[in-house]
Image (cartoon, rainbow, N blue to C red; front, side, top):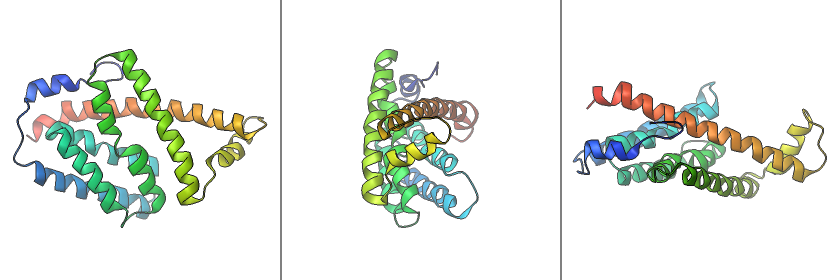
Amino acid sequence: MYGWRFNWLLLEKNRGNKMKSGNITLGGILIALTIIILYSASILPVSIISVLTIASAIVPVCIIRSDIKTAVMVYLASSIISVFFIPLNIWLLYTLIFGGYGIVKYFIERLRKEKVEIILKFIYYNVIFILAVILAKAILGIDVLLAAEKIISKYIAVNGRLLSGVLYWAIGAVVYYLYDYAMTLIITFYMERIHNKIK
């Protein structure tokens, strides 16, 4: 790892490309663990964002311990199964924003071209932001831009929903890049402190 990125190519070089026979078992365990973590957000007095961040770290761990195919399976299965056990808002946040980010991060950072990676992550953020606004209105009945206007107007004198939306988008972009950096730190911590001890 250096800067904001994890060196996925170095990981693959060190472990080789051999399929592990325990991938299905590992996938099942990680799916169950993801659902338990997500469910805890609805029964324990904990931050939803913290829970989502921990749950989203399961996918990169799966990539490290097995392969990308198993990680995709873990993400998709967790998203499908968890809809029956967790509140709709948490499910939507996990499925749309947090859950699959480890996979996106993996493919983008394998390019090892810093400027291209930053651009691709920025494009990804914008696509997710637009989808989140649309789906929040369609599924949850929440007008994100109106909510942003009400929240931001408490702290900054702004007139107009468009300006509030732009400020909300900008704040979201900063949080997104901080989340990306935090994910790199989590992955690195796992590799350095945990991975080799439980092989």
